[in-house]
Structure formats: structure tokens, C-alpha cells
Image 1 (cartoon, helix red, strand yellow):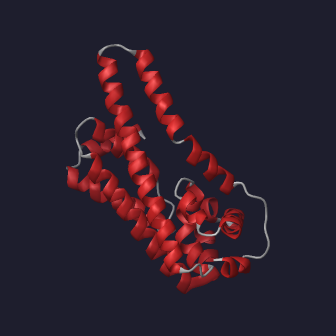
Image 2 (cartoon, rainbow, N blue to C red; image 1 turned 60 degrees about the vertical axis):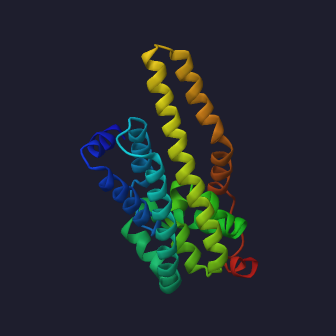
Image 3 (cartoon, helix red, strand yellow; image 1 turned 180 degrees about the vertical axis):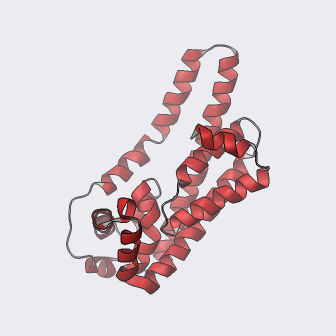
Length: 216
């Protein structure tokens, strides 16, 4: 992650924003890319004043919402054969086992899997295409997609921006205790969402995914 951050420093701010939106957008379409790493690195970069946190968050949210929507459209058109092809192309990330876990999440949680899936690497990649393939109503998908994208993008960016600024200030005063408290506070503020997200990722098998169409 630090290598990514050092590489981002060499780019002009507009390029950083475009890169954040682009990487997260393509990842949300169903292509395994390090979207979260790029966002975290850019948020920490914002703490140094190189880029603006509001634009980093806006770029991330825009990429997440648009990418998921495009992924939804592709998944709805391509259906399960498309997901199978993605699994063969990216077996480590989107193989049969990962796809089965994502389907179980949708079968149990419906569109809430889209919202909390933004905080889980597997569902962050598969949420859009899978929701389309399972014919989740787009209106409900869009609400959950937009809410999850905004909370994830702005929450992650401003959490790391605040912690980074606090760390810079306290390190100047050699206040290691203050730095530790800031990090703990930041971790605690995202604990609930992470806990719920990992519960979704680890759900037990459920009936046929056709149930999703009836429930959603």
C-alpha cells in the first residue's frame, strides 16, 4: 500500500481522482482490482495536503455507483453464463466457491447484500453482476448500491484523513499515546459495519437463488 501511495504522489491531483474513480469503477463491474488499496492510499495522501479528501471521496463514490450499475446491466444481459466465464478467467477471486458464497448472501439478505457488500472484497466485486444475473429489481438495487457506495467512500476517506492528520500533529509532539487512541477510535467507528459485512460473507448455504427473485 505504501508503494501505491508513493506512486500516487508523483501524479497531479486530477489524475489521482480519475485513478481512484476508474479503479473502483472497473472493480465494481466485476474485474478484480485493488480498489480499496487505491482509496486508502489516496485518503492518507489527502492527510498530507497533496489532494483534497472531498474529491477523493466523491471520485470513489462515483466510481462505485457507476461501476456497480454497469456491472448490473452486464450481469442482467449475460446471466449466469457470464458469471461462469468470469470464474474461469479469475478462478482465484471469482471461482465456483466464491460465487456460491455470494449467491448465498443474496439469497439471505437480498439488496442488503449490496449495501454491506461494499465493505467485503468478494461482494464488492460481484454485487453488481450478480444482482443483474439474479434479476434483482434495479430500483432497489440502485438505492442499496448508492447508499453503500457513499457510506463506504466518504466514511473510509474521512476516517483515514482524520486519523492521518491527527497522527501528523501528535507525532510532532511525540505523543504516541494520542496516536494510539486515534487509531483505536477509527477502528471502533467502523467495527459495526465490518462485523455485519463479514457475517454476510460467512452465511450458511440457503435454498435455490430463484428465491431471490420472489423476495426482491
